[in-house]
Image 1: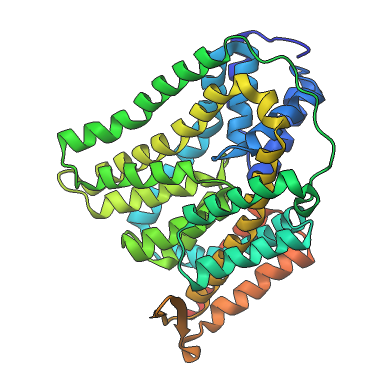
Image 2: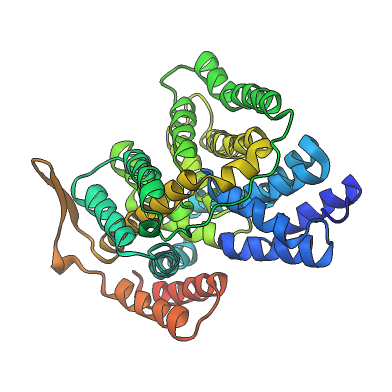
Length: 437
């Protein structure tokens, strides 16, 4: 660490980063690096990369966790809380406003048209993420095999995402010691520094306080409303999601989309695509799309509240149970950071999980494509196998044309993510007004 700023200055800086954090984790990490390392010189380059490696090992949004960890380095627990909360809060308020507009503005031609165009942008964005993450993660044929197995497991065998994460992590953990080259790992070991003397006490304290804070709103909803109330269901579902959210928001979406749409019936597949498109236009972690899901789920099962009140409570519950655990991992694990980073088996587990995530994102890409481009898609089962029957005559020609346009923008003209979404929203409104679709 090179310089410790006043706490008030750090708070202003974290709020600024939270407001400007567009472009997904890559853009947010780059922004953080420019401000914290290059401009402010609060941490040096090795410390920043060290912290990033640690955050990549954890479930949850790595950019928000990196902010939390650097805040903890600078000012302890209060610094970590300020950094982590302010990284999320601006985007959360924007996403809440967009969710309200979405719920109350359906049926308005311009709103519907914008959402129609955003769906096409989302398809291209997911394909772009698949290519980007695949290039980074699939360094060996063994990792390609893990990705292929993950796709088959989730798409054709309907295996649960947590099971795929656990299985891939276990494979990587076992292979890392005997054949690290299969996982693309260097053969050299990191030099360990002396362990933090108070690490166990800090970890236990953070775990106890964090677990109580995490589950208190869910318990209150169960006591004050009912164990079967939608707010309890939201709290439980997204808490489970927070524990297995390795690999970033796109991997999480594959599991969340199918659970929220097909298992819980909270929304349609098209609405899930809309939510991702809205999340792409907001600052903060892309995982804020979970807030949109929680809002709509509670909005539609509002009793005993009004729909708007229930939606706001659902959004708040979702944000709480998604981001409190992500900060808990930091406060509990920070004292062990060097030991965790240098552990070859944990690094191998992460490499295998990341490879599996590529297969999961491929599943998400196919699933989104089918539901956006075709009007009639039916899930079919035969024994252990699951597939989707598509009525080719139900293809949405205008949606396909817009998807091609979005592809040209993203891959041909290399427009930025937010720009692509905005341009496609404008195209969608034009199509809606011209054709009345």
